[in-house]
Amino acid sequence: MSESIRELLMQKTSDVVKVVMFGPESTGKTTLSQQLARHYNSVWVPEYAREYLQNVWNNERRTCEQKDLIPIALGQMKLENDLAQKATDILFCDTDLLETKVYSKEYYGGYVDPLLDEAARRNQYDLYFLTYIDVPWEADDLRDRPNHRKEMFEAFKKALDEHNKDYIVLKGNKKERLQKAIKYVDELLELKDKSGK
Image: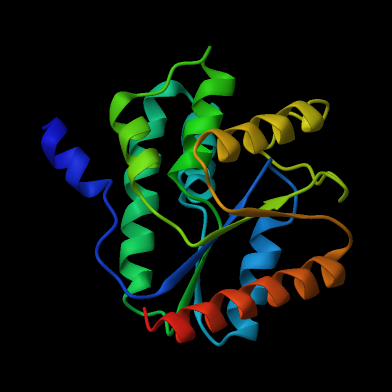
């Protein structure tokens, strides 16, 4: 069974450029994903955990538990792999499995399922936008750490550094973040055109 899970957590081969929004909850990742997809006339990958955990909350009145992480990761990769086939030149991802790994470490005493860890290390993206905590906190059924934003931001930054990921920190209001993100995405696409990859 673990072999099939390993395969399902893998990215399917795709020529599209992949950009990830990465960072703590309530830092504007979904808004930015939607804005960028609209700007580049492409598609974006929603965060599967939100749908999954909202259903858990509605039906069981509980929040995320360790047992939920692999189902969340599987759902996320299915969404990403399906939408990568529909993207034009670029795919914007509201999250990735490295983000799931960070949450696992922070919420469950440092534990990360070996299959999740392997997939988080193996799956590749062209650029990460690390969203800073300078936007207002917006409460909902699922968000639960309004007083730990700085610590969570540092945990996400540390993960990117440890995994040698290329990333840009995005600060400021929605317009400022979008303008900065477009600048870096344009550079990325131009580089890809020149390299012919």
